[in-house]
Image (cartoon, rainbow, N blue to C red; front, side, top):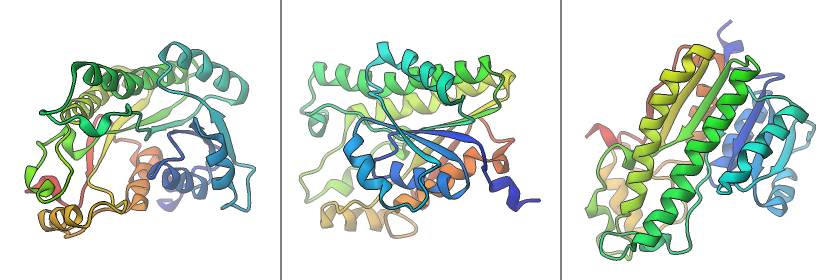
Length: 262
């Protein structure tokens, strides 16, 4: 009985940003659970390379979409739903950002960069989730929507972890991720009447060959004394999409090795 709640045979899952560092593992997790997975991304060549990792490709599909094109998102998602079925699960783990993203500290950021990144990231998250929820509601699909926030959407950034590195705090990132977190709560409140669950998954720092000094600083701060791995985030994203989480909605789930506990 309980194990079956974690299975997703025949269910359609859309993974937006499904070829990124975390997105690749989220896509893999849903495939292994039996879902029909549509990766929504912009890099078709990257998908071809990724698909070679799987023997059975019948349940893995690619849809080219630029989520930052807000004017075109609605029509593209609607066409996809009409052609191949409305999803039961929508996971947004995309990470759109501008070319000057690294210069988003309080001391360097420009108003143009701030505006651009809020539009690229926060607005694309809000609008795509709204469009998918509307499709689910219109087709009476019991759905699960999972958006990616961050620990730094919930707590202030710790300046000590950037010491002796070229890295710095990111003003816009906190505003964006905090907005996503509270937006999930509003969506959960509104779309609950349609049996649609909406949750925010907040990863801590994920190891990606960062500056060794930064990694050491980060590890000292974290109760588990290490950074997270993409698969540790993907497993929680999988849980939130399954019937095992059928009464979970409107939460901000921290997956951070205890970072926000202290």
